[in-house]
Length: 314
Image 1 (spheres, rainbow, N blue to C red):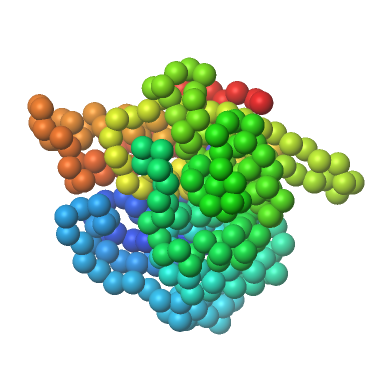
Image 2 (spheres, rainbow, N blue to C red):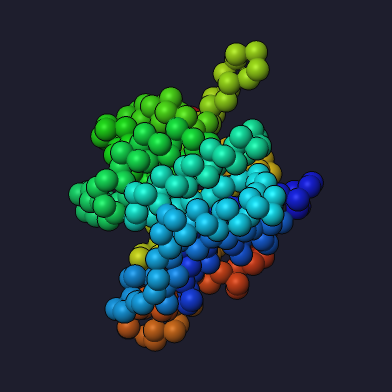
């Protein structure tokens, strides 16, 4: 199943010594699926910040630039994909945009996959967990150069300035996002009512491509996946990485790409929750360490996911 020719991804994300978020959550799946992955670690922390304690270092935008310059001097700055996720610093994000633009000048087919991590909803109330000055950078600089974006509902609302109450609203918001640049938009989670019932979470996808002759192809899908009763960290990073891989392998079929991505996610989450409960012991609530994604144990599911979640074409 590997890509026909070597396919290289530049992934600029967090690194943790222990556990699976950021580059630790993205690299293994991409490598398993046949991609070469070059990682820039935007931070190096002992573990993710959901633990009681964490220590470590943060890479600033000058240091990012310096690493990129090293690649450029050796003429090894050729990429097929760029992948980015959680960032806290506006100047770092602006530097990422400069790098993406330069890489796109070298390779006009480069695909930039961006998870615009800004915040989420808890009990219906949205709040940002990155500094507010990142929103205009994402909206005005990042999203216009992105090809695939994976916001949650709250992030999609922030980027467009429009609230989503119904599926129709969501489709209109995705159209607004397409108009800003990306040809693939996946709203990874929402608080919309799922036709299958309250135990399901709705994700929506939209793919819009303009052919050389000016005709447009549009594909829109809904994916309902079973809710898993636990708070995991790194799931968005894993999702974006697998979506990159599966859209590469199924370039004009967002339905299949999302089915494979979401099915693999389910396999990983089910394995993780089962294992976390066993580790925590009867009647104890699993802690952050117990709930780290079971990545290595899920290698086969990542490589060749059994489709357990189907998408509906809208």
